[in-house]
Amino acid sequence: GQQLNQSPQSMFIQEGEDVSMNCTSSSIFNTWLWYKQEPGEGPVLLIALYKAGELTSNGRLTAQFGITRKDSFLNISASIPSDVGIYFCAGQTSGSRLTFGEGTQLTVNP
Amino acid sequence: KAGVTQTPRYLIKTRGQQVTLSCSPISGHRSVSWYQQTPGQGLQFLFEYFSETQRNKGNFPGRFSGRQFSNSRSEMNVSTLELGDSALYLCASSPRLAGVWDTQYFGPGTRLTVL
Image (cartoon, rainbow over all chains, first blue to last red; front, side, top):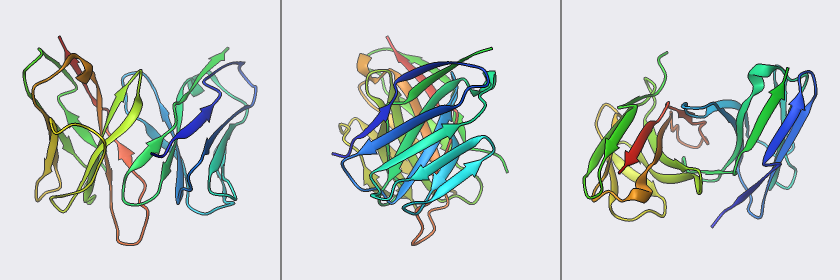
């Protein structure tokens, strides 16, 4: 089946630093999505990417849909304490079935 | 617009029992998908319902089932509960417009604990 490899698994950074995480797959996806999940809550959509090569920003977040359609990255600039959480990438081929990465646990020290 | 709502938020059951979880999608959304989240397996797709029909199914045993009503609300049922069914069950809704890969929006989840 399809699998997404997300890295790093965890990050410990200082407030103000930039963050980068990525996902790779052996399969092609039509859509890449990035979600953030906080304890006790469901994932919240951050950015959706629909075209290979697409670069999209949402405030301090920037994500790119890889040219090969097998990878995506998410950057967070000038991190703040409320960025803490687990970030998931998700790939979508047909229908509404999402394949998720394992998640990146982000800790931001003030 | 109100978001995806799930009830109950927390549930404790014992092995062998059955459970029904409910999901109300965002108004106007016609597709509801269910996911299981556990520390070991991460987020795993269970199934998707659209227009009261199951359109897609993940690799879960037949003990996991669901349905969708005409108002797009959905329920999922787990029969003969096992300890390994303890998880956060997430519901996601999307408009499911033809020809568009719709973005999914998640509810807060139902935390199921099986004792």
